[in-house]
Amino acid sequence: MKLHPAFLLIVMAFACASEKPQPQPAIIPQPLQMEATPGFYRLNEKTRINYDTGLENEAGLLVKYIAFKTGLKLEMIPDRNQQNVIRLELSDLVDTPEGYILQVEGHEIWIKAQTTAGIFYGIQSLRQLIPFQKGETVKIPAVKISDEPRFPYRGMHLDVCRHFFDVDFIKKMLDAMAAHKLNRFHWHLTEDQGWRIEIKKYPELTRIGAWRNSTLIGHASDRPEKFDTIRYGGYYTQEQIKEIVEYAAERHITVIPEIEMPGHAQAALASYPWLGCFDQKVEVWNKWGVSENVYCAGKESTFDFLENVLSEVADLFPGEYIHIGGDECPKANWEKCPHCQSRIKNERLENEHELQSYFIQRIERFLNSKGKRIIGWDEILEGGLAPNATVMSWRGEEGGIAAARQQHDVIMTPNDICYFDHYQAGPEGEPLAIGGMTTVEDVYGYEPVPEVLNQSEQKYILGTQANVWTEYIPTPEHAEYMIFPRLCAMAEVCWTANEKKEYSDFMKRLKAHETILDLLGLNQ
Ligand code: ACM
Ligand code: ZN
Image 1: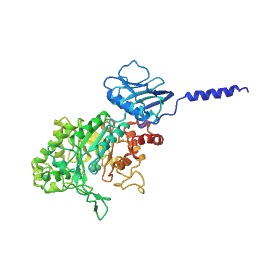
Image 2: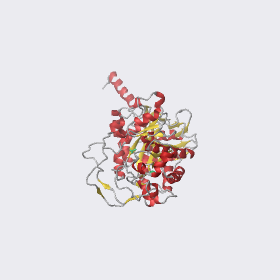
Image 3: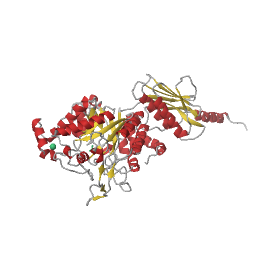
Image 4: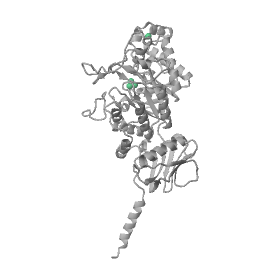
């Protein structure tokens, strides 16, 4: 049979099509520029990881990621002149601090970046391109990616006080954050319901303050109130804290500890009653809400205590920030306390709001003297903002907007979008939550830079984060269920340029990405 020339043309067109660019790979967060090119790199046992000096940590992690996905155990070699390599190279070609270029070609793969962080993010993208497939040869589709983050601050917060989460779980979350190119872990370590960080100078904080005798059952609004009468608690030793800080640093995540003051302090007062206004004996709290048992702002001993605590904290956490809370501090005790009232008089303060501002400013001065900066929740605007403070806006965006207008750095975490303790669906069929409704689509649609700010004010918005409060989240599995996949959407809000964001496209990529979440052992 003789073939018609037109038919041959069609066959040739098909042959070419198979060499044509594949569909764009599904990477979350979506890179700035990505072009799928024809062909594959064939990963095999002879592939070597070749890295510049200073990239041993990143190369080592890449070896582990590849072994996990393919079973191939690759060797690392510092020698440049090798074939069949994945090459990690520090290069001025990339001019943004966390940006990278990743190229997968037929004969090699290379990642270039100005910094180790950029290389690490290139590796995270490559990791998503490698199929989960055991075998002698694993094909990675060719692609060119040039990428950088939209925001420098890309975070997740975790409350380990209402419920305690162990070191293994924290590491698992850090791994998941790193996989999504998030770089700030805000660790909420002290609360009314539990003090979770060992402080050598004040052992009662963990001997007494880390344990409560009972916990509320059901929702805080349920009546009558019911309690489980089970002793509950836990804390991190300083050795464990160092281990976590180091684990995070290897993954280019800075840990920001939060030591709450002047409110949310009942566990500290349970440990040392002299920290309160009336030296009254209280218990570590067994309910959810906002306790009136706050630090006395009048006594010097309160500041001595906090400075000693913060000195130990500053030594444990190398990052620039310490979060000092500042939210939800009821003033009822201060109004009646002679120490607080004489402080107001002697410092010529107008009222208790200015007393709170005095408190925060004094702590800020101390921490600045230790080379640290403070972050506080947006209540720290009340009574006057501490001069160098960064504001975390949670009661909507108004606090963040006001702070940016005062030329203060801002992290936007408005609760209607960024609080992952809200329902994500249902609420029928969903586990009990605090309330609210924040779907994946709500998170995805978030724009952290308010239009009402002018361009010079907008640059004070450093980024955003998910906040995971755990009153209603008692177990690791439950926490994962609340965090994923909403954190994937948040990662894209943090990283991806606005013009590259599209919800329907994200949802398609999320389908493929679910396999990755499964591989990370995350309950979605
Ligand atoms: C907060 O949710 N109280 C910061
Ligand atoms: Zn007082």
